[in-house]
Image 1: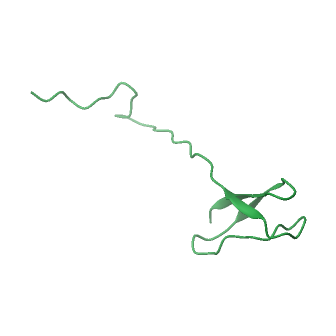
Image 2: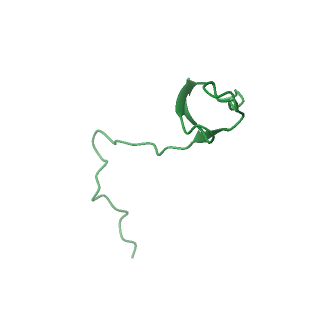
Length: 63
């Protein structure tokens, strides 16, 4: 199950929750009990390992 980060706009606290993809987003802050939680979108880091994944790899020039 993925780990989602939520932030409360009322008390500015961040929380992490394990949720299934099909679960509804959480809207009530567990700390201050206000319905002001929003999901925080974070970039995903991708590391390519193995042969054939290099920064200098480019598509061959077409003639």
